[in-house]
Amino acid sequence: MLKKVWIWYANQVDIRPLTMQVFGGCLIAGIGDYISQAYLEGPNQRYNKRRAFTVTSYGGLEIAVEAILWYPFLDRFLGSHQAVITSFWKAMIDQTLYQPIEITAFMRYTWILENRKDSLKEKFERDYELAMLANFFYWVPMSFMLFLVVPLKFRAVATSFTCLVMDTFMSFAAHNNLKEAYTNLVNLFKEKLDDLDIDDWW
Image (tube, rainbow, N blue to C red; front, side, top):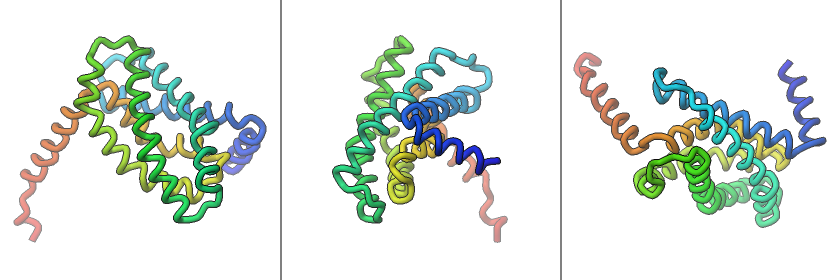
């Protein structure tokens, strides 16, 4: 069954590559936002449809830019062969040049389209570095493997499927106090460690 679905999808990518990749980007971004709203931000919070539409639409726009401009540019600049050293440099350029712009664009896009009243400047000052750090640790090894293994025509959509984790994280980061959430998580981890009686392990 999965093999048939994959064969159908691969054929559709050949016929209408941009449409299929944008659809995949929208789908994964929408799922990531749903996970963030429903499970990370508390079950008592009402599902925000405007936010869901905004994040989902950005997922499609992001994939379109990557499929049409960014990944073809990297292949022209560094070559299309999937060698280890080439994949390494593509991953590093992707993280140092493209990702900072992409994260900035995502935060601004959601802030503008959702007509939010909180301060965008304060949001960037408080959470941007944490978001970049998390993005770096996740995407450097992931990008390297994608550039090394995945052909160009599947790369944008493969990126969208592997970035469900980061789509969920970025949806949470764009709509919550990331610094406060990080501090609470660290404190919770410390409390759990304090509750453990190490002597009982021996």
